[in-house]
Amino acid sequence: MNRTSTRDTIFYWLTTGAVCAVMAFSAVNFNLQEPLGPMKGAFTHLGYPSYFRIELTTAKVLGVLALLIPGVPRKVKEFAYFGFGITLVSASIAHFSVGDPALFVIDPLLFLSALIASYALFLSRGGDRATAGRVLRKTA
Image (cartoon, rainbow, N blue to C red; front, side, top):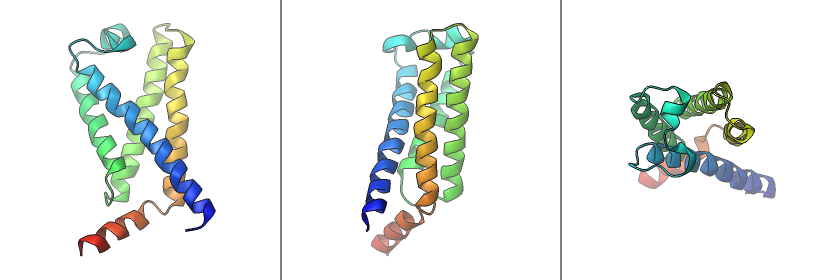
């Protein structure tokens, strides 16, 4: 493995890990009796119905699993990237629409940039074909 590909692999896992950590944290935090930080009452504040929390939690958990588990089909991973992109843009728009401070509007966009970097590196790595090949060889 050359130096560029090692650096790209590290950057891929850092960006992917950061996005997945934020998605997993928010999915868990949405469902706590006493959510941490500004997520307390967030769904009501943003005007979302309470049942949306369940849908969003399920989608985030499935998306995190799709991005982190090796050997998941490329199209499933791309669907997860797209879903996370929609989620982050929607979060930014929702916070802007209710007049939240700029930090709440910009924060999802920062993670969107990490998501875009992760996706670009995912594509440059061949859509995770190399990882899938290693997993298949180890199990055979």
